[in-house]
Image 1 (cartoon, rainbow over the protein chains, first blue to last red):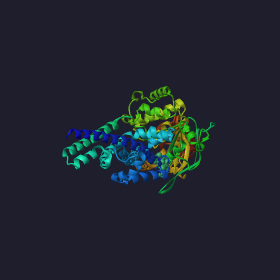
Image 2 (image 1 turned 180 degrees about the vertical axis):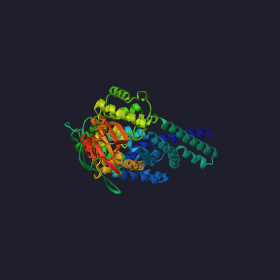
Image 3 (image 1 turned 120 degrees about the horizontal axis):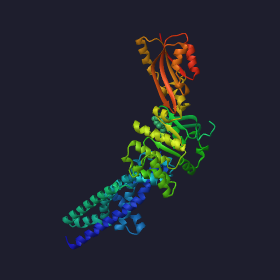
Image 4 (image 1 turned 90 degrees about the vertical axis):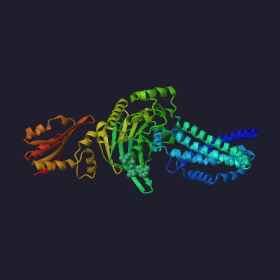
Length: 215
Length: 349
Ligand SMILES: Nc1ncnc2c1ncn2[C@@H]1O[C@H](COP(=O)(O)OP(=O)(O)OP(=O)(O)O)[C@@H](O)[C@H]1O
Ligand SMILES: [Mg+2]
């Protein structure tokens, strides 16, 4: 392991962390309202809006059924349109966010469905409007469920960033393929794997810590 | 009564459409509930009790008819007006429905927060409510750290936070042990007397009705069979020919006793007439049996007797055996003239 390689490893780690943080953030921004929408619009639920429910469910299912590696390629024109390039770490954040958003939408929806309907009825009988029910009943009560789901998402995203790296996104995946696979550098390959394991463990640990917190 | 009802059902029907078809949960209900009353709603499972209660705050929307609260047709309110109307109607549930992620204090504060009550007022009100329900020392606990009875107390405090005129209770004590049930009933009675709050209460437990209700509505298959003052409900003459008599009997005491008594009487060779006598109010204290013995010369044998307070009145039930005697008919007429309900259960030859 030359000093340059160590340096490249450091850069790659930072790039991976950057991709994970930003794509989790954007995926959450998109996925949370979608999940709440799915929950509220489901027939028999609070808002009963079947067409919106079907539309959201359709989008979520479509995106989730496309293998991520194909989504990466499919989204190249869109990414280019959005940020001007389809190569690099920033560009990788676009498909990562879009790929993870439906995942988050489903897990938010699932977490909300775990809440006993009686709590929502208590809110209604208190005179809450829909917004108050979402912010004061649904989100606090599903907090730990959502955090647990997010932990899963981030772990999955760590894997996806490696894939994104393969198509020029930088990060640990890129490094492992360029040096480890193409140049038969087994040491680097092993170090990359160890770093990824540490990342997954750390995510799990932070997730569990956050889920236990009272809000 | 001369006052205006605080809650009034007019020709209200509710049906549910499900995949299995249409279920008529309530059929043309007419019911008036007056300010300060504790109204019990009883009836078999699936009778429509919850539907009736939930139509008051429009958790369920009636399919036809009207529901008036303070003389305002709830169905004509806008979404915003309805939410304001709901601040005036507290509700407690069998499953408590407290937010598990909020402390006792935060749960009680919630209804006040959503109407933007100033922080200092919330603090004062929540502390006042905690004292009322006797949980001041549990303010920072979470619901999972409380017993069932304590959870229901928190729910009562939460329901009262906005000083509602009406409190709806859907089987609020069904999940509680007898001691907790008793303490919740005491609490409900107390807030009824203290604040004049009108309480509509669904229950399966007949003891609950006897304990705190002023009036009872008995419903079955979506129809109101009876609405009576609680003492009159429990001391009523059962008409075996009336279509609702079985439902009534199941609440105020069945005929199953009579069969066993009858066989005992036959076995012990006790002959004559078996009577069930129910009396309440003023007549309860009077020595009825002594009258029968002294004034009519009857031979009276008490087989079973029971006295209890229902509401604030004494209600008595007795099963007696009277030996055949020429004055029996006159004696029974005398009892009936004293507002005593006399049922002839059997004649043992
Ligand atoms: N959401 C619903 N969808 C379809 N049918 C319903 C629904 N809610 C209630 N029903 C039906 O309406 C009827 C009355 O129900 P309701 O819950 O009012 O009865 P209840 O008297 O409260 O019974 P219980 O004592 O078991 O709580 C029942 O036949 C029930 O199956
Ligand atoms: Mg019910």
